[in-house]
Length: 188
Image (cartoon, rainbow, N blue to C red; front, side, top):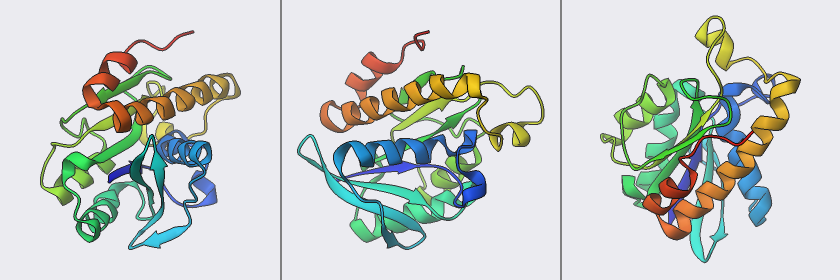
């Protein structure tokens, strides 16, 4: 089984914000594969199904971003998953808007949700997919909690679709294959 976790903040007030792009990828992936993300496990909403013949669980933590590790660890322990079976999808303001970056492991890069997950799992050795939300023109917190401008929305929707393709590639073909295919500059 693979666990795909999209990071974000729960609640209508955060829907559509830059920080919730991980949730949007989970929603799009679930929609594409007919997986209902409606079951609660611990402090996360989850859905289970098959992608390319591989059993997957899609998860959206309900802990708010900075405590995401609690939800991820809880699912991993309940399902006896090791860190290498987990793929985390999240926003990155160090990447240009819409750019994707896949890595097999690494640091938190200053992202508090990732910092929480690394601390909770006790390792950095798990794959992750970062989605560029663009550099902050003002305060970083204000930036990540802001919504995409209308001019950015079409571009980020395309990035979300490519991110879904990238997640499928990681699940079916592995991290290395996905890195080769998707760690390219965004088109446009």
